[in-house]
Length: 203
Image (cartoon, rainbow, N blue to C red; front, side, top):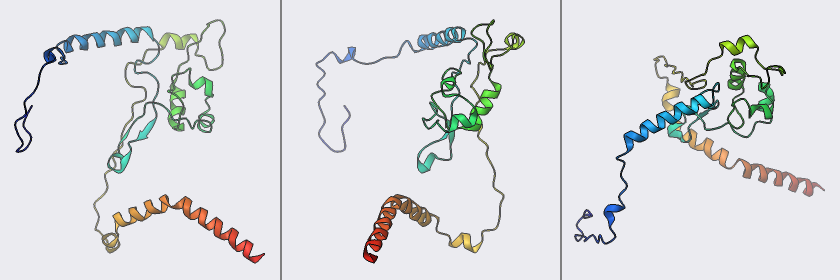
């Protein structure tokens, strides 16, 4: 144990066979090979499904520090009752065609649904949306990410800073906006109570 500041030198009491309790990772290269082989076996097993799994929604990272970053979320959010009909996808169908949970990005789902090739369960009994025999022959398994997210960087043009921009207090404006959002419900409740009180007074 390393000494802390100017305190006394500590005496470590190793009486519990500590050398057998140390976690080691000497088999790390073998684990890497094992994981790669497991991925290959899974890719063969789920053929013709995409190797990367279901399509993911586009979300922004939380907090002010990271909210400019766009990434893929684990699953679609649960507020799908109004979004799935806009994309033209049934709620039960969404779980069977590789849409992770439910959704929020309507345009992303529409694009995914247009590119999707649905394999029929029975070739003799084709259902609505199933692909034809010609499409079955040309279909290949997707090995990369399903609809990868592309971050578009827009460079702002240089311009002369105006007097209004110099005098604008950005941090104070953010604080006021945050405070207004925080007390919105309380102000609405107070205004409603005051209006009811005025009505009772007039009576």
